[in-house]
Amino acid sequence: MKIKRVLFYVLLINWLLPVYAQIKPISSHFNFLNELYNPAFYGIDEQYKFALNYRNQWARLDGAPSTINFLSSFYLPKLKSGIGMNITNDQIGAFKNNQFQLGYNYIIPIKDKLKIGIGAQAGFEFSKLDGTKLITPNGDYSSGINHNDDYLNNQKIKSFRPFLNIGISMNTKYLDLGIAYLNSINNANSFDGILKELKPTYKSVLQTNLKSKIKTGENFSIEPALMINTDFVNIQTDFQLMFNYRSFVGLGTNIRGYNKNAFESVSTIIKISPLKNKMLGIIYSYDFTFKELGDVNKGSHEITMYYNMRSVGMKTKLPKFINNPRFL
Image (tube, rainbow, N blue to C red; front, side, top):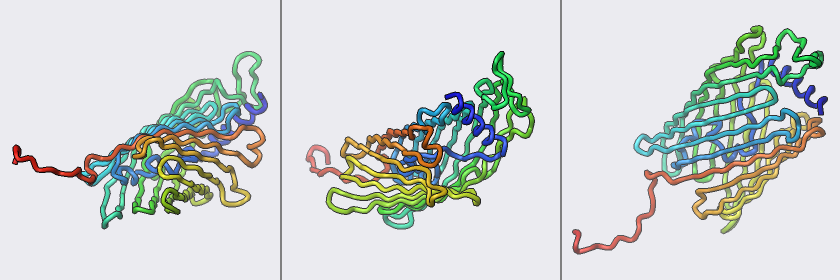
């Protein structure tokens, strides 16, 4: 187990020193968490939405990544807009990352059941590296902590950076399309108290997601979804296919990767919505990890709970009206 821990922290150090890092932790529930990635989805479905997501990646591997996301989205009918808030806590080994962001989306109705969203999302990221949890290959830990590394110490060091995401979306009855440009201002982390070389830079990422819902019978439907991320050097893809029975239950799979070199995992997904109006739902998935990493972990678990509420401004069917001669 100690060997795994050493290897893991070596990977973490290599992630920090080359100066490039991922923008957002991956999620097998991207199809249900559009607002988490693209601000142009805030309020686009004319609902109030709350969602809590937890992902335990590469289970049973020491220092494995764990992520908690909370998102909320509100439709403002009088302003033809949507607003939202996201909070993320991501931890991998000795590195902890907290994000807080607010977003606004201007919604343009083109015609019946067709809307365009233009959104922006600004926030702050607070990072912390705990040097007391690091183990380096040449370190001496017989009497205290000595990493024998010019870039690392045994202190808890912190960093702060702002970021900005922008996006557009198209919403129809059968199709949702979103394009987002993440981390558009390209700020770097700058940790205090250590050499300036330790400044991870977060590349800008272009993200495209597409999903549809196709009825295959009175009670059944299929829901394909695709997400593509690229930093203009590398590409990551997620393809998902859900089979739904009414609005109560859905079963599906998610495939991450597009060729033998990028193929990472396959997920099984189950979604349960016990209420007929689909207000409340629970989603669970398990990722089977491939490549060499699959030999030293027990896959990834992810669970999402959401609550949707119809906006007061939405058009609803009026009840039968009966004239009362007492109140004319």
